[in-house]
Image (cartoon, rainbow, N blue to C red; front, side, top):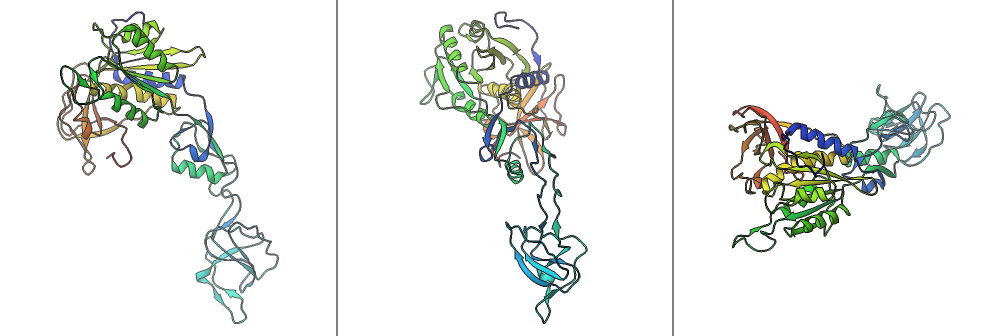
Length: 412
């Protein structure tokens, strides 16, 4: 559906909208780039991580002690430190001192722990060998070419360490999508307290911060506004954003009022609607459209409602799944929470209710001050309890949970 025909079709069901956004993102996933392992944290694997060698690549001692050959007692003929390649043990009754991680000499039968060894009067060592093997065999952790981590996995410190242990110097990853924000509304102030009919812009600081936590790059200068309330200004603002970004988020103008120029601007840009209104409250008049550039690559415009909480619902409902697809990741899974208090339904619409989750009890309690224009409740919330259409959330019921992109330690 093109933006030239703003349809009167029914709103898209909330769960269907999430799926559509993820599919659109996957179809337009960003091309892989090769980056040093040290720079890959937080990105997404674009190729399977397979072993470049067996792990471990050679037999290594798992304890400090003596690598021995044949029966006790053993004559010590050398020393093996980690990082050295030892000579073979050629004769029975010989041993070498070995450190944890040291390469087992060819010909060694076993490793005797240093704390379980004793010296004979003539300087040899003796002791009882354990039945369990005291070294790591080649391929014990993984064989050459074995799949370790599939493509689409987020890169975290564990993945980084594993990749380095396999010998990777670089990783093929999906880069962070570039995002830009355009703030619409002549009534907005960017400094000082509200007054005289003008309100302070809350989304200018709020949306970029959330986009970064969803994995975007938001460059200095990528947030522009308030944009003048004219069609020409809206078209120019979005066009300039599309030249620098994979995703453009606009705030306000998603309805069809006298100064709502977003839909005409999308038509002027030749945009194609992917979702135009979603059956969710708050946040119903949200949208995502796609523009194909001269380079053949898709870029996306997410129209967020001007009310702050509604804009946040749009980010969680449409933008997060879209970004997951662009980054080559799976559709974000919904958790569940148990309601500590009743949460009303919203008729035929999904109700996303801001909740605070108690980590000790695992229950979710609706927060106060959650009008569409309010942000006070957001400041103490961990996410949204999702109440399905035609239902209400009773106290004690377990319902789907959409987490906010909080920093480590902030999530219950």
